[in-house]
Image (cartoon, rainbow, N blue to C red; front, side, top):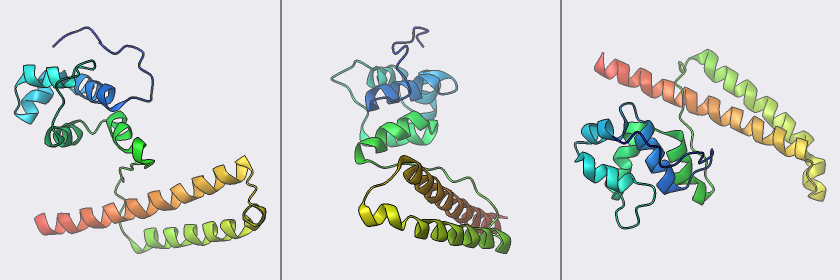
Length: 162
């Protein structure tokens, strides 16, 4: 594995080619270990992940494997950004009655908040603070619901394999 970083100071927002390189290089053990884990020739993977290589690209199946093995947030960002999407990795929380009631309360509070924004919607003039608050509340609801869903799935799988 080369000790020379071919992509210094790339910044937080990466193009897909750069993100693939970073994901492989920053993987524990680097591109060599990633190739081993993917059961792939090291030289072939190094060439496919080289940030300036124009002729060789990982196949869609290989990209899927790289995502699976690295779970690199920069790579996930680079994959979904062109579609205007945002990815989220839910952290499982127990899907208890108490957790579900907390989501219901949050939804109720968010609903009341959205109702107070009628002035911005009426004249279609939104203040930055209103939009930021609306986005934050929306993401809070989404995160809680996804976390409970992940917790329910984890509990189901633990029962099935326990």
